Length: 179
Image (cartoon, rainbow, N blue to C red; front, side):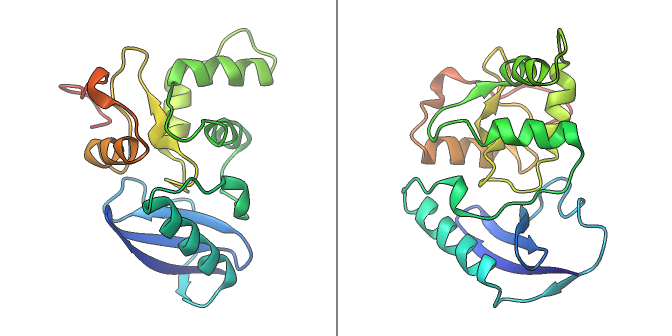
């Protein structure tokens, strides 16, 4: 059984999802792939301890604090490759960013491969079911492009600026599938 609750934020309404013990989803209203990892119906339940913890974490984050990802019990639903990518996302420090290529190289090493497709990594990053907390907004293209945020480029910019990232050296792509 899966549960959901809502959290109002400066980015819009956020839906949180849980299996009762762990956080399995966090989607911004209108986000691409919203809720797609949860195949069963979610029952509204505002009283789960994990939701209280997640809301507290988000309150602190949006106040400019740097709460640790490890404070929350996370259980994103996905295959081995996606989970490996999401684990690397959790290692990106607050206020910093890395490229899809950087992640591809790290995953290749972990999986004992000579190389890994940046596009495959982009797909895994884009399907991250626990945005903000698992910080997929901290990933940019190798050329500094702000491509690839399922919540929208405007929200990606807001999150990076909220964390103190100087986005003046980053660019918004003129066209592409991840705008």
